[in-house]
Image 1 (cartoon, helix red, strand yellow):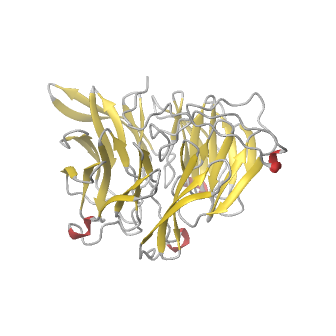
Image 2 (cartoon, helix red, strand yellow; image 1 turned 60 degrees about the vertical axis):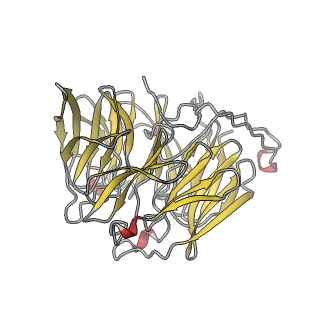
Image 3 (cartoon, rainbow, N blue to C red; image 1 turned 45 degrees about the vertical axis):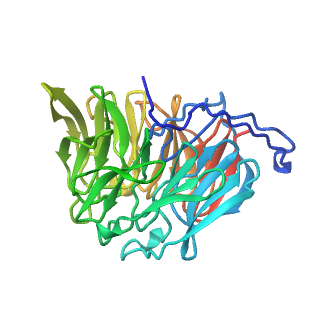
Length: 422
């Protein structure tokens, strides 16, 4: 049974109607949907509100498309609004748009003089972190590692914190890419550079520091907020290790060393399922790890390890008791893995893509390839079975998609598009 401690109400009613001529005057059904951040309300990619159609449409209808700038941040959805964090020129911008039309409601800009380091130029200078929405506030993390809180209604800047006085370069080599998470009254992110950093919790209302844990360098992975053995904790894969930290106090609970070394970066976000953490890294396979609590002491048991597939930048998702992901071996191939044993059940063809962003829905997995192709595949252990495929962009698509009840938000290289499934 899933529980969430996000303070944004998940059952927020999102009512919107479209009378676009593109849809021939049809009306998209109302959505009681909120999508507050990277991989959704529970940061697991599961789309609670979506029911797959009996037959997927042969094509999608484009409702609107707007230029929003560069970056890999996920769109956020609440009420009748969409929030997008991106880069335009020398500024990072946070835009609030009407969901029905794409019309701009407000826009805030913030000068961020960031330039991608050598080797990362093809990914551009736009933010790689996804913002998060909670209690009427949008929290963004710039490529330089500054965290900002914005009023979701007006766009007013509420507070900003910059840890560059503590860490002279407050981001790893290719820019801050971790996505903050909100748990209760705390917004949590890992600040710092490759050599030194800390996992920090800030008060959502004031930005004041509540706790700071450790001195490990930052990675490109994002933290999770989960409950293990009755203890609410932040699971964070930093530059050196996977760690569990008490969410309320910041106390260190357990760790599993898996350092970033040479060009093998710590990038995917771990996956949590049935008390286990599934952790995969570039050229380092995938681990099935189980934190244990006995006589007041924590430890981590390695339940299984497999080296046949490995995660590079793409975060995997759970469907049933199966893990669906994208291995960088064979120049990119989809795979399915048994979460209980670690056995790789099937692998798709090689040279599929450079990156895939996943969502999970009943009996299906939605996979957005970085070439703009959206694939719907059966969530089955038997073999790769494609149910539907759509071309949703003509430029690169690295940002995570957002699936509404009967529509889809896709952020490509510079544009945000709403596609109707009707």
